[in-house]
Each structure stands twice: as C-alpha cells, then as structure tokens.
Image 1 (cartoon, rainbow over the protein chains, first blue to last red):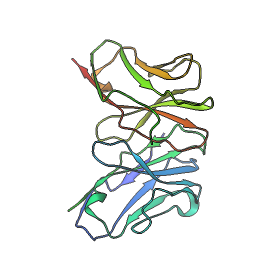
Image 2 (cartoon, rainbow over the protein chains, first blue to last red):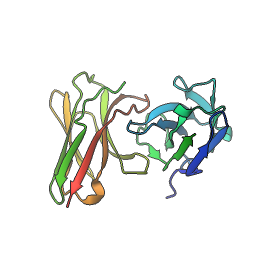
Image 3 (cartoon, chains in turn orange, cyan):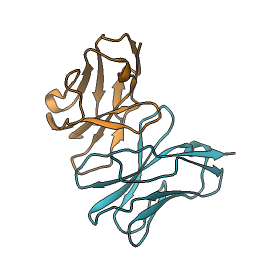
Length: 114
Length: 109
C-alpha cells in the first residue's frame, strides 16, 4: 500500500520569501492533517481537513500560512512571507475518517529559513 | 497541551524488554491512550491504542492500570531499529492528536 507522499523533502529559503509544500494522502483517506515540528519538540497541529473542508485551523498563523485541499485529495501548505521561526519539519498525515486516530504520516518537508 | 507525562529518555539493552511508562492522571472515562513513535528523519508511526483493557499487537503491548491513571508500553524484545522517540497521547473521540515531547528510547547493542 502506498503511503503518504510529500514533496519536496528539503527546502532552503531566505526570510520573506514564499514556499509551498505538497501532500498526497493515502487513497481513500478522508481526513488530512498538516503538523509543524520544531527541532526537539513534538509535532504541532496546524490544520485538519475532512474531504475538502476545514475542520480545525485554530493554530494556523493565518497572516502568513494558508492551506487548501481542492477536490478532497491532494493538499498544499503555503507560507508567505516566511520568517526565521518557521524553520521546522512540516508533516502531512491522513486517516480513514474523523475519529480514526490511527494516522499515517509522510516523511515530512524540512524547511530552513535563512 | 499534552495531558501526559513521560520520562525524557530511557536506555534498553538489545533483546531485552523495553517498558515505557506514561502518566495520565487526569484522563477521563471516554479518553483513549494512543502510542506513536518517531524514528529519526521519519514521520510518527502508530503503534497501539487502548481504552481500559490491555492490548497487544504485532509491535507491542499496552498495559493500562485499573484506575487508568497510567500506562506502560512494552516492546518485548527491543532491537536497534526500535531506537526512536515514543509519544503517549490521550484523546477523546475525534479530537486531533496532541503530541508532547515523548520519551527518547535508545536501544544499546
């Protein structure tokens, strides 16, 4: 079974630049999550989608972060403009449905903001 | 905020059982205990979960105390590939996972 695909694997940008991350969840999974993991900490939820609708984006810094899941499959997370403190690993996860907390995670995108 | 307390690090000899404790003294009756692990440079991986009864699968066993205020994840025969950060998470229903800092398990040859 194919897992959660994320790209790119690594990204280096300068502060104030824009960046986008892409995620393809496991086929048939209705729920998709984006997490941010700063070095030395556990992952922190940014946004949760159910199909193409947002369930929870309370911790998403909406002044600079945006995410979409058009057609309820792939998802894109964007940062514009990036700050130094955005340096982190961005993890995408999917699950069969809400309430199924067995999440499958991708390997993440490691972002370095210089 | 995470509702659990875990030791920051533990060591275990290869081939021995690894017992990872988790305190969740404020757990409510309908909250589940989930365990995930994160191997270096990978995303977290689901291990096991339970409500009241002890659970076992091909990866590990989960022992939950009768008062449900603490639990232990048991890896019966730890290998070097089990070196990872282990997260104990308490959640209700369809609320998203909230990760703490977890326990860094080092399996030593």
